[in-house]
Length: 345
Image (cartoon, rainbow, N blue to C red; front, top):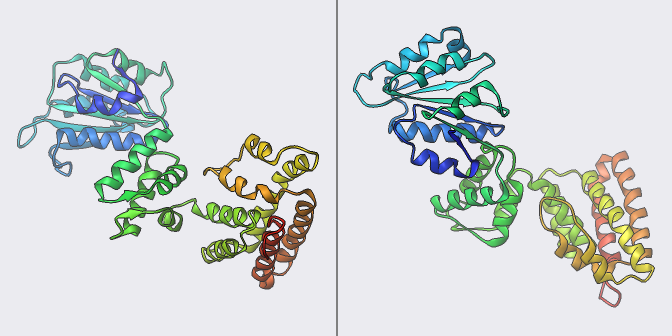
C-alpha cells in the first residue's frame, strides 16, 4: 500500500523514492493540495516556469485521450533531466490514463495529480494506494498545532517574532483551507513592516475576523466596569467600520448569556465557582475577562443593564444619525453599572 498518513505527508514528499512515478495529492483542503503539489514540482524542477520541463494538463482532456498522458511521460526534455506532468483531476475518470503509466517502464516524467476529496474506495485513490509506484497523500484542514507551526515558520522566515498573545490570537483567527491562513499571515508581515516584534494590536488591526474581536473588547471592558477601556475599545470598533447597533447587539447577547450566572449568585452560589464552571464560547479565550467581571455579577445590575441595552438597540436602529451617540452613552452606562461596590465613579 502506498497511502501516506497526513502527519507524514511533508516528510514523504521530501524523501520521495525515484521509482515513484505518480503522486496523487487530494483532499478537502484544496489550498493544502495546491501547496503540496507546488512543493512536489519544485523538488524536481528548480525552474517551474520552464515550459519544456513542466506540462499542465486537465483531467477531462486526458480522460478523452488517455494515450496523451503516456506520451507526455515518455517524452524526453529538450535539455534533458526529469520532467513533471501536473494533472488536475476533473469530473471524468482518469484511471485508464494512469494505469499504463504505473504499469509501464520508468519514464522521464513525474505525474503530480491534484484532486478534491476522494472517499475510501474511489477508483483513483484505490489505484494509487495499491501501486508501489505511486503515493496517495491526503490533505485535511489544519489542526491548531499545524496552524501554530505554519505561523511560527512564516513569521521566522520574514524575520519577525510573535509575542504570546499575538500568537494565540493569530492562530485562533486562522482557519479554512491552507490558502486563507497563508494570506492572513502574509498581510500581517507586510503590515508589521520594520517592527521586529508582532503584538496582538498588529493582529487585531489587519487580520480578517478581527472585527468580531473588536466587539469582544467593548463588551469585556464594559462588563468588567472599566469605563476608560470600554470607550477606547468602542472608538476602535467604530473606527474600523463597526456599526453601533452591532456593538449594542453584542453587548445585549453577552448580558443575556451572563444573566443565569447573576441569578445563581443572587441565589447564594459562589461567584468564583460560577466563573470556574462557565464555558465561554468564541475564537479567543475570554475566561480571564469573566474573572474581571466577577465582582459586578449582581442580579439587579444585570436586569437594569439588559433593559437599557435592549432599548438602546431599538433606538439606534430607528435613528441612524444618533446611533453612535446612543451606543457610546449606553456602553458607558453599562460600564458604570458593572463597577464593584465601593469603587470610585
